[in-house]
Image (cartoon, rainbow, N blue to C red; front, side, top):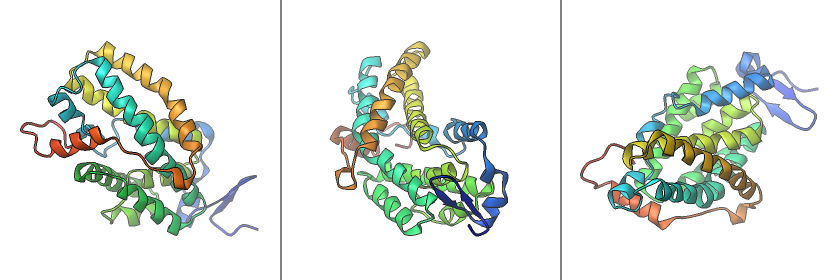
Length: 251
């Protein structure tokens, strides 16, 4: 017999705190879970995602990205060579760890993801948004996020995975939504920086959305020892962005 605060499904036991068990979020039906995902990936989520370009600003300044085609190549490369090999596999493991209420495993993958950031700007971008999301989730009555809101080393994926587990968002939808949110932010930055027209931006989103399934499939097939990825051009752009004379974005 499960103890109070434990929710049992056919194949999984998900442990929540008593507060989360009593909260309506702990009994999320599929349609509400989908709406919670929309909330997590919305550009209006107050975590400051709009203020980061992940090196794109310098790439435009240097002439590496100058039109819709080069913007597509820049963003697609990160999608398939970084997010599919680093962020998504870590997110999957964090999701499983939160489901099992395994704090040690959560700490392990949060630390691994933080160590995977190759520049100070990329690390600061990840941790700033992670801390902001943890604070927001605490205010939305997810008490397990409170400890992470007080820390300065919470990666974005860590509270994101926690919210997904508490709100019963299926993992497949979590992975798609996580990638879509990043792609949408990159396209929004490209609209301002390249600049691209609105129609070009929508064409770019169509192309990127077609890449999501391949990225998720790749991430699902990786074992722990296969994880990791690097794009030297992105790292260089991020480092050089720190000293760029005029900047609109924080990374």
